[in-house]
Amino acid sequence: MKIILIMGLPGSGKTTLASELAPLINAKRVNADEVRKIANDWDFSENGRKRQAKRMAELAKKKKQEGHNVIADFVCPTPEARKLFPADYIVWMDTIKKGRFDDTNAMFVKPEKFDCHITTQDAKKWAEQIAEEIK
Image (cartoon, rainbow, N blue to C red; front, side, top):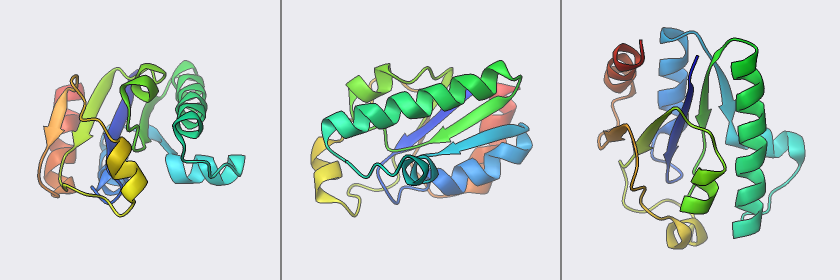
């Protein structure tokens, strides 16, 4: 079982790719917006993002321990946030140069480590490729 992180700027196609990929690898999903809504935590400061990464990590680890592949889609903008998330496979959605939130754009650090670098918004194609690679 694997934990797959799909990360990138808001609007890059993370949730769309997660939706396409999940059924191909029989994965449970952990979506950042849904997790924030449940936690009622809309703090997007650096500390707020670390808290969110920890929440996402705990949910993903729990689902993996239950015997599932897990796909987590969230911005995960800083190296510190990425260190808090136990990804077995990292997808970087590098399909846009700027997201819709200036504070996120300013904080986002391009990842140095990733398993798949996506530069086009073609979720179906990429989902099939990633599923083959993971299997």
